[in-house]
Length: 410
Image (cartoon, rainbow, N blue to C red; front, side, top):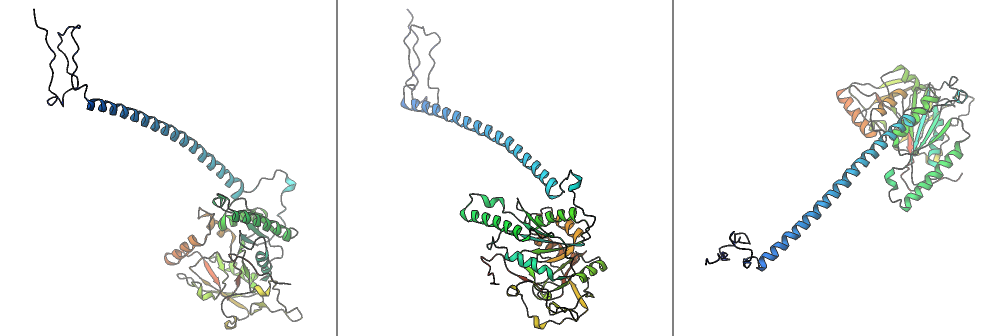
């Protein structure tokens, strides 16, 4: 009788790198007792198996998390693209319908009768939220000082824009912002109450923050539609008023005689401090049409010699010493400059609009980019045609950034 073949038992020290189960002989009969390798029954083998199981579970969980993340990312990307596309479409439509176009009037009788309007000059005053609102005192002083533009038509249109807050200002809506919104609304109502019956003054509230550039373009679009003969534009800020009489008629004559002049700034201090000089451009001297002495029109004999200045004298402040000025009746000059400014100025309507639109991003203050462009033009050419009005203290600053305004008792 043959002796049954026994399973080979491998020493554990020698089998540390071998498979955990040692196969039995293929001739071992089914009825033979099962022989288990001592390696299988060791504690190390059990813990290793458990670790592999946990690792598989963690791997499976991670795969699920990654899959969920990818699905959410794809859905968000699709929705985000749709939202951005919708936003761009709506914004472009807004620009076409509101900012760069004119409204469509379907009834012929409602069209403005512009054939009898012969104004060659318009005025735009930009305003925005300041601490003194809802008081209109500052902009009232600016409007009153327009009377110092001697020779300006009494029906020249005046556009007052009211800029809105940035949308980012509404995040969280703190208490002080709520108060500013209420004050801006009350300021708007007060402006309407002050000027509703004046046919030349138009109040244009804003439903979006357009800053100086966008507000001016919005006003210019309206002027183009309703006052198509306008060739020149005064730009005034809501806290800068005219502190002396300006010969408007002489300025218009100068613009027509010197096509290279596109823009003239009114200084709030000495003109020689405002970067005079630009390449080969020369100072231009031209004739006055009225007699202005010490910043005030001298009336002809028999006329009231009082100034037509309606600006409150308490608010008339400026920099520099007026006593050092000398004015020669009959002449005035402008000097070329390399410095653009958002302070009060007069400009050619068409040139101004094209220049602002060339900035692409118009909801901003034009001063910084146009300052760079003007400086470059003076150095490398061609110049932009910027000039300074050579009289001291043409305008004065009420400073809307201050928290309050002293309103004089009348």
